[in-house]
Image (cartoon, rainbow, N blue to C red; front, side, top):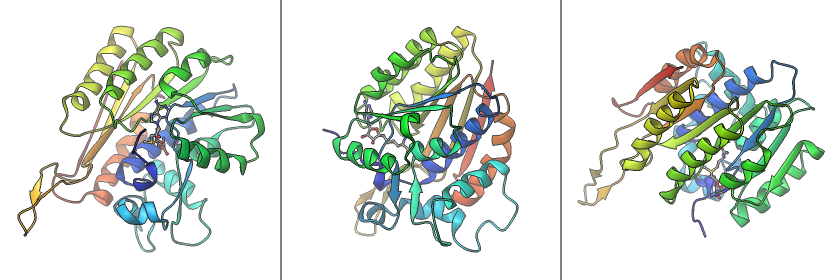
Length: 297
Ligand code: SAM
């Protein structure tokens, strides 16, 4: 079984990028009255305690969301997309400090209208149990369905959705390198079933050929299908392996990640143009911190 648990990483810089993009996309997609279906292929546990054992062990949120929400931080006016993200995370917390971090299922559900639908896929038994328990508290009734299934395969039965409007968020752990190929197959198949859906794929930027190939292949796929696309990346530090004083090699942890969208909302590029430089400013850890933003149609 998998060893990846998102609780170690909740609220890190990759979540800041992913969830800011997700919120901006959903805000646009829910402007139209027609019902929207959101498919979250890799849902995780839904809610995370940043003061719990998992998060405290890795302390990744300290260099992510907590840089933006500690009292006194971000007193300059923030880009609207980043402000919406912070406001949404804050709405899950009673006091000034950020102890609870909402994962994608809770972020999405918060932005849906009563006639929209959310399908959540999660394969890990412990995360599945936590997700079921967390979702039950929402009392969202039939709006939210939790499926203990492989998300890559499970989306197929919901495409195309009855309302002909859908966002597919695909956020695997890439723990096994076959995930990269599965993402491509899922998007290719999704476009055949439902060509006008919005597909949003998160991926890590790490020294692995599959990770570099993924956005290139998604771009080729979008271009061949005649679809618009958007690609945003955020780098917070160097990817170089360093040496400790004791002569041990030290891996830097995840240095960068990207979001690739096919059929993105047309407003997204302008929205991110403002937000990404601020993410670099607030989350950057060394002079390698940078962002990129590209699109095409
Ligand atoms: N999307 C979540 C968020 O933003 O809060 C985080 C998801 S985490 C990066 C990936 C999750 O996918 C893990 O909880 C893992 O157990 C689960 N998983 C791994 N392979 C899966 C598969 N084939 N289908 C569904 N879930 C899977």
